[in-house]
Amino acid sequence: MARVDPIELSQALIRQPSVTPDSGDALDLLSAELMKLGFTCHKLVFEEEGTEPVPNLYARFGTSTPNLCFAGHTDVVPVGAVKNWSVDPFAAEIRDGSLYGRGASDMKSAIAAFVAAVSHFLESGSPKGSISFLITGDEEGPAVNGTKKVLDWMHENGETIDYCVVGEPTNPQEMGQMIKVGRRGSLHGMLVVHGVQGHVAYPHVAKNPIPDLVRILAELNKEPLDDGNDLFQPSNLEIVNVEVGNESHNVIPAEAHARFNVRFNNEYTPESLKDELTRRMDRAGVDYHIDWWVSGDSFLTKKGPLSDAVQSAVEEVTGKSPELSTTGGTSDARFIKDMCPVVEFGLVGATMHKIDEHVAVADITSLTRIYEKILARMLA
Image (cartoon, rainbow, N blue to C red; front, side):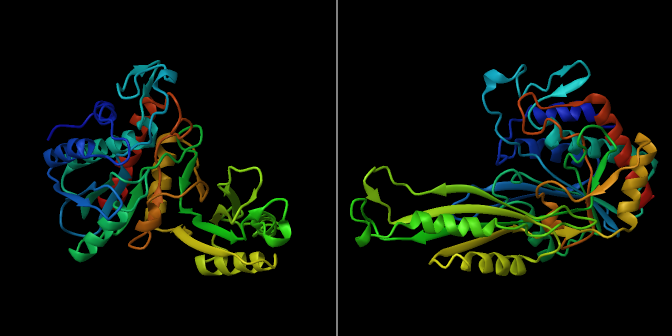
């Protein structure tokens, strides 16, 4: 069995321009590498009305328990203006000790590092359990036809995972700084206030919805939602859009719209948060309509074998004591936590989604060593 070079595989994956959703080329390349290592691979394509079909990959080595899963995504965000890049964003160029390209940080290099770690680990024999990969092509987009549906497929087909490491870029500035052991949830509110359209010179026969919308938004942000706790930063509500759609200078509009997002900690459930926000909006004393969308619940993985294995592996390789954090946005860990304990550890995320995204080649090598030690701690 040939060892996988994590740098070469990182470059090969980056050279597949898999902007969300991944059409399958990067996943096919990954599947081919895993089959060489003896994995059974399932390419799973899901779609819904109004969304594009998305290929996903579930691959497994072994049939016994525990099943240690690595989860991630091959899709990447758009590159933006190519002229602003100093390199071709899909050439995977190495310059001054760093690998450049869209997906270098988030998160194709982490996928390559885990594949390489598995190839190294299997040289010593079969694991005492199973190793699996859950890789989606739909994490950076709507996340409708990705990890959540793979988990449903697994349930229907009797596949379970016992522990999961998600390879998102968790380190702010240097390797070994941070492990994610939870995430805040995400609640979206789509707010509409209705009025009566009319001429601006005759306001008594019209009703302007804009002042009412402003009053509601002011009530939502009048006081903090909470102060956070030892494990989570405070919940925050951000108004992300206000829209009237009125291009006329002398017409009172018929309705006004706003959208907001709340990143909430474990002080709330989605339902208790909706109740609190409704209470605040009702204080404004105006008629409104609100639609809710929960894109992820808050969660915290309790200290146990998985977090201990990741923490000790990071400390051994980097010499640093990583912070156990719940900061940042959402990830697909929000779906996986319903099946098993899940933690996140990957590369440095300082340049993810940016122009000239890059990671240090040495960090990819370090991450491979960390993943190999996690495998040894969990399955040797």
